[in-house]
Amino acid sequence: MRVVIQENYENMSKWAANYIAAKIRAHKEDRPFVLGLPTGSSPIGVYKELVRMNQAGELSFANVVTFNMDEYVGLPREHDQSYWYFMHDNLFDHLVDMKPENINILNGMAEDPEAECARYEAKIASYGGIDLFMGGIGVDGHLAFNEPYTSLSSRTGLRALTTETRLVNSRFFGNDMEAVPKYALSVGIGTVTDSREVLILINGHNKARALAKSVEGGVSQKWTCSALQLHQAAIIACDEAACGELTVDTYKYFLDIEKDERL
Ligand code: GLP
Image (tube, rainbow, N blue to C red; front, side, top):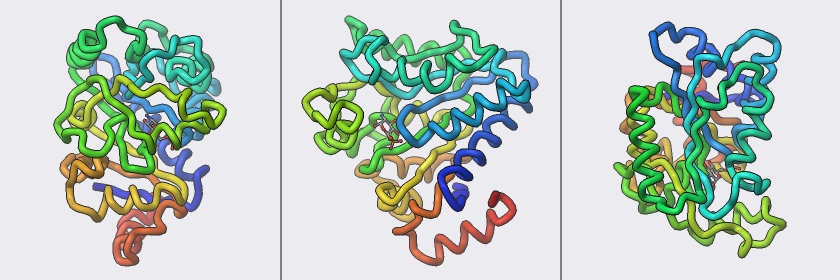
């Protein structure tokens, strides 16, 4: 696993956007580049930078297919807290050459959630899998909406949200936890780790414990993000603030080995 430590959120975002852009540009195969995407506050800086590059003519999304990680159950697309809305508001609506038919987001209003999740997995497979899955994590280490004790080989499915996650996310629902949906559809940990590459953004003091557990703890279903340790090409891009609970030798090791990657 690589851990790329950047000084602050802005640099972390730029580094991750540059990494993604380089992968899209380098993709020369006779099939689209398949990109997995998250929501949340963590990726907003990356999305801003990708939009800037796209509008400046430096990066095309014409040959990119996207799959989002998750979606709340019961929120219609037009709801300003649906992940469909978030993605269009923060990324897709601003890209000059993104094809709407290449955007894939789980339908949280589906009458048959199981069928919807099976369809999603099949569609990912139909493109030959995901090239690069970008993600964020929750303070409890959840990857997508795979809360603690979700199987590390889980596939896309219906997930119950923990009280902690609903409390954390209530900031987007007028601080009313009851307004936060209790369920979500989410790709599984296995879905993410099947991707050829995984890039996870971890920033801020409140993620320090989750970062330490992801990197230094054992692989455990209690910290579902720790499954990254078994992936052959996983990168964590983080800021200094999130490093607060790493041991000094871990922190120094990654700074040393990645020193040329520091912006
Ligand atoms: C939600 C999403 C996750 C996301 C997490 C972190 O719970 N389902 O995919 O990673 O929030 O959000 P933030 O980046 O705002 O801390």
